Image (tube, rainbow, N blue to C red; front, side, top):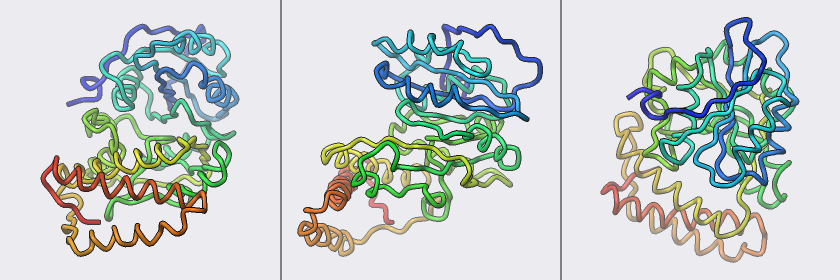
Amino acid sequence: MTGEELGRADSVMTASTEFTEPVELTVVFTTHNRADLIDEGLAALAEQAWDDGCWDILLVDNLSTDDTPEVLKRWVEKMPVTTRVISAPGGRGPSFARNAAVAATTSTSVAFVDDDDLVAPDWVEAIGAALRSSPFVGSRHDFERLNDPALAASRLNQTMELASFHDVAVVSGAGMGCRRSIWNEVGGSNPDFRTGQDIDFALRVSALDDVSATFCREAEYHVRLRDGILPSFEQGERFARAWIRLHKVHPDAVGAKRLSLRRWFRRWIALGFRIRKLGDPTQRLRWAFDLGYELGRLRGAIVYRTWAGE
């Protein structure tokens, strides 16, 4: 299945600026019902520049029912390069929106920005330059600018290097850059995964010859997290279920051993001992995430009939 089949675009509006050379990079900004939030992220995009690269912007509205489409249209003429607004009506979620965007562009590469995050100055230049030498690139995540210190300290993903799923380097979709040819070759982002789609994509890319993920330290990307005990718990639970499903879908790629019941019980005992540290806000958020993760692992094992290891 191709990226074009997975997501289609309509309702295209094009800025007055026309291209004079092939587009090297399309920056994709996807959103759903964030009319009250996206101005900040769009303003950060409007400040970007890449003097020796030809790039454009694609703003993707994914089934919004608020004023998001109108807000997007207001920003078209404020952007430094040709900018279009499209809709992604095929389904809701990051995969549908990203697939629709890739199907709507002919650029050499694409890079993705989520609607609640911010790109740092020179992000476009850094990610664009990185994609010239590597077909699959991850930005350097920063959690401090947009989050409470306790919440920021509870997340360290992709701050110093790429994470890995067993021995496969994975790239978060937030701030990800990818050659469009690679995206289409592996079939785009899988909408069947509402969580874990980035790992699923990375596993499919890793199966290609001579393609590996690269961490771009110069491409700083500010990530906004959902604050609170319940959101942390829910995120852990969703991630664990996705983790189990990834083992079910990609058994040959990961080669993971099953988690023994003894080790699983030890994890629950360790969670119990950590209760005494819950006075610390950061530890409290991490504990909520890990509790959700263990419950999600159990639920995933029942749903997908597999008991995956670490």
